[in-house]
Length: 128
Image 1 (cartoon, rainbow, N blue to C red):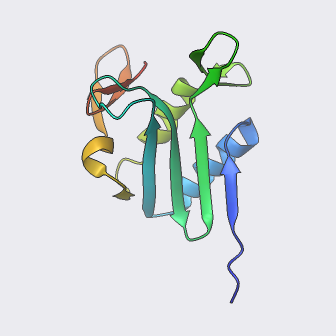
Image 2: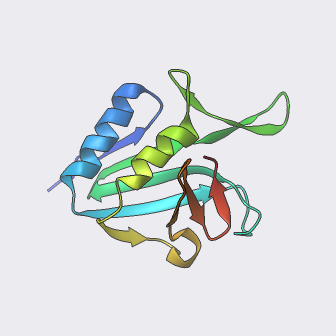
């Protein structure tokens, strides 16, 4: 049996919607973050991956390297910052059974205040 694989780079509203549908339909989700550092206290999240089914995966970059300015810049989808979109998507993982690579680095703690919700990944702060 050959497994048909579907891997998506989430860079459009349509793919954000597909990712949200995928998360809503699955009970068990594999989740991982990519950072710009091996130091969890100084690093920044540059993207994350999600999969709830064998052979299906989504990667959403939140920051990309600008070769002209030699800096990381926040990605945008239809004029909306990807950190804002990521917060919505990550909040959908609450209550799911998560499978994580290096979970001690990636574990998500939700900090809620009256003004905003931020996600802290052991020192990696996803901007509000």
